[in-house]
Image (cartoon, rainbow, N blue to C red; front, side, top):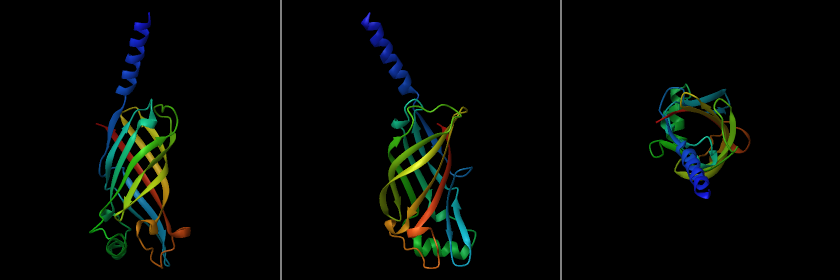
Length: 190
């Protein structure tokens, strides 16, 4: 009697593990990374759709998920060519540090995530920006789309001096040289 029960448990565990899928975040489309800042003249946003990466996720076990996101910071556009040039050359130094990367180390949230039901999770990982890597915990809203996609959004702040980036005196960012960042990504099952 015990053998069928053990076999059933192993089969169920294998089935749950098999639900883990890899989802690709591809450059362009609806994927966007953006920030907001204010200088002495006006406020401005910078954004790029040059975002890519992967999400490995199992809706039955979100804690086993992993995320890798790459953002081409050299493609950030503020809408003003001269401001873009100064931001890229003087502050972000994109010829040396052209990519920002976030790689998760843990995911915390609900025990499972149902399709079309937004779920709030916390993703802890290493953000590499301007050649400096810092561990960060960021809140993420995730929606599993039944057609095989994941939609994830997050809003968080980056303390620029932590990454060796001096904030220009004419830029009035939020308190303590923090820049609000928003990521909005769609990932399709591979």
